[in-house]
Image (cartoon, rainbow, N blue to C red; front, side):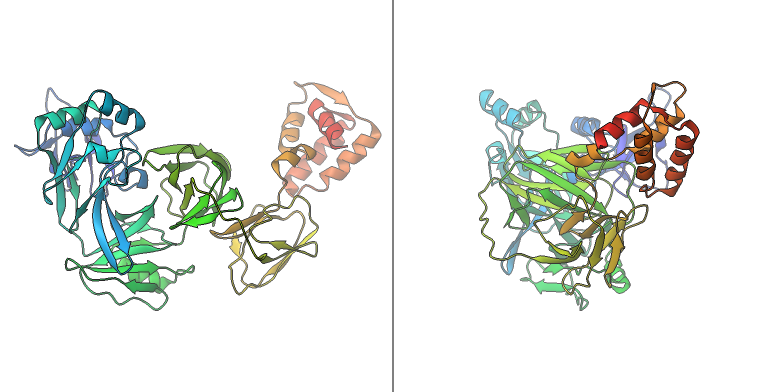
Length: 504
């Protein structure tokens, strides 16, 4: 077997593994494996004698080089443990991924039905329960250190393999004293102790009773199976004492690095802990609290737990929800505010009142949940708000919190936002972009002027271009363009004349 998980849950190739000092586990059966190498076979991982099977090799072959055991999309692609609250009561389940539509058809046409047994609970789940439309894709469990799966008959295993299913035979259970359960689609999924960013409702299980800090809202649920359970909500502001409190349990809590918000449609309801929308076309905005990384990978977990990954170049992303049900969005390898949507029901769009914001653009107050972008403005004022924390993103600056409001003028402001709730954008909308100069392209055209097509502009157009240069916010860019304009005077790249004609 070429790859195995290290102690951090990262998939490691045998050639990069250490022979001593680090414990590696099989991603399929959970058994300990050792690095081995010989004259005939190159570096590989080997089970202890009597352990491992052909299915371990097949399962590992399906994992990609970027697989991470603790990534949210990886968690829901194999059987995973979920926490389900019922008022003050609760239950634990092992939830199984659904069959894909093609697997379901193949299962019916070729009679490839099977049953999987959870050995520790002595209970079964059948292929009929894993249909995409089923709500029974789970087994009730009690806390155990681990769980393993097997087949009652050889025929069940044959059908399972013909459908191309290679779930691990083993999964870790309750070995630590504390576990958190975070929302993914409609399930609260168990996550191992690690670095997390929690900003919504989640649940906690503990072997001992916990005394919570005053800033955390915690509701105690019934004690069961020797475990205490709590419903928890964390405040918007994370203090150092609160972060240190979570570190005692192995969870490294940090402020969300990014926020995901839905921009279109602008009207939505609620479905459990998700936003309810009735349009399949939607636009998602990514807001960064510090700075924007060069490469963004947005992960979309669909209702059947199938995940898609998109490489983004901007802060807006348009997506089509082709399947009814719960959808989860998050940025890969970055902890932040996840977005949960539910598509497929009618919304009651009756609103009785408007919500005024603390933002005033040209002496006109903007409205929350209605206005999202302003194309032209002279001045902006933000008043101090007792309800929301307003943040501002100015050009060429990091986003910062407006504790006491402030006054701003054109064109310094890019956006003002309430993290995780709403964003006001002050840049031109997409359909108005044709009415502004692309100064970076114009500078490049001047640099390549000797090789490119040139033309002549009138004195009136020359004066107009001079005035437009004065509105460039980037002074370095402005000085470079002014130099070229004075150097060549009325002779300009063809792109410049086309831009002037489009503007006037």
